[in-house]
Length: 93
View 1 (cartoon, rainbow, N blue to C red):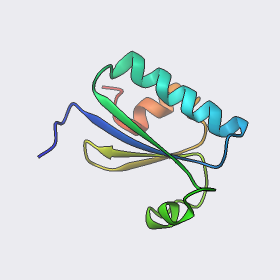
View 2: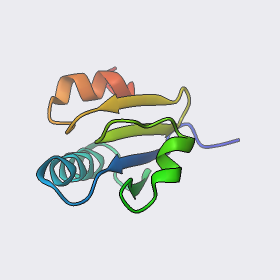
View 3: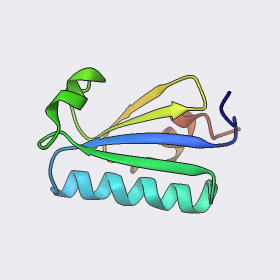
View 4: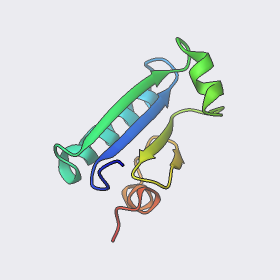
């Protein structure tokens, strides 16, 4: 059984373009602020590992998957709309 206070994320990006860089920076900033020492982030570049994206049914990027705690959630975009991001991750309570 996983720790319900520990968050695992998988962020799908396409190369090192501006949208990818912004999504990575926004996720890192949020985790440093709200989840210090309680998170893990895996970055997957779909240009290098397209099969991983297909396995997770990711067809657009950047796409964030919150893998734990459950439920799994998907958020598309650069993660720049903070209130929507918090709501989507279930962190707005």
